[in-house]
Image 1: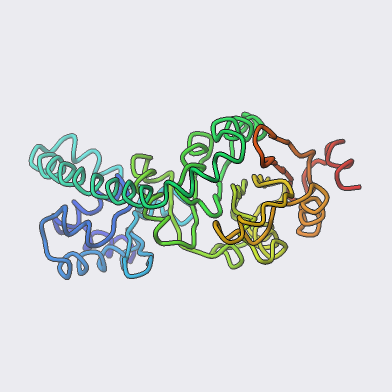
Image 2 (image 1 turned 90 degrees about the vertical axis):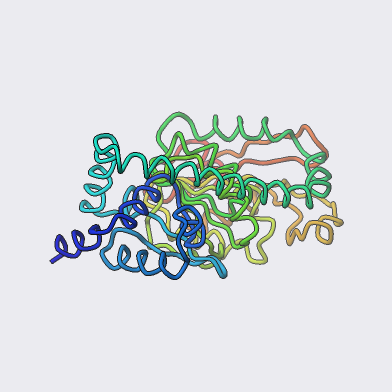
Length: 328
């Protein structure tokens, strides 16, 4: 029985502490071992018991295995959510348990600091090339405000940030979404994003390694898809948008932020751009073929490169006059 398996899994003080830590943030097995002051093999055995009981979930990023609590997203379960509430109450009411949790959080602060130092070092190694690219287009703050305004005040629901990079888009939209999944193919960038996003509520953010042409998600899972400065890396943009459409719910929305078509050929070599931007007509065709109804694009042309915001709604939603005009 599920309840018996759950109770057995919780019959150990270390596993109770692990569950409390996972309610704070997603952690690697090695990070858990560091916080708990125990060997990694021992912690791995505790983790296996929690995962077998359905209270935690593993996912691999390269040679690292990360753990998250099985609450707060579509794979959550009522028993796990009840356990999370019980442990929160126990920390408030049980002084001994509260003391252990306080010490664990103090150690967790060291883990947070290590992540931030690693992210800062990565940015320092690449700062010059990123600064060079930023000088060519509208200020990031201007683009972010335009994108926020374009998506409006309504809830973004389940949001997928494809190619999350530093995690900035996930951070920006987290307050307006029920749950954010930040996906990137690069392990280095996921570690940078993890440092940026580690202070968000654990049940509101999820980081996943994956490729934008083969998304590791069920069909129709997301209400909002964001591709911010990602599509120009695609050898086959149509395949990327087809995958995005597959995981978007009917009447869900997609937002693409990228460059208008340009002739800066050096970006292919210096920044690995597969595409030198896109025309409005090309993006409209790509979106329509993927099953989206495009809206009127937004143009930000304060730099040498024009930044465009292309919005569209998954077929099945209302079609605006602007969308009809763009689709023609």
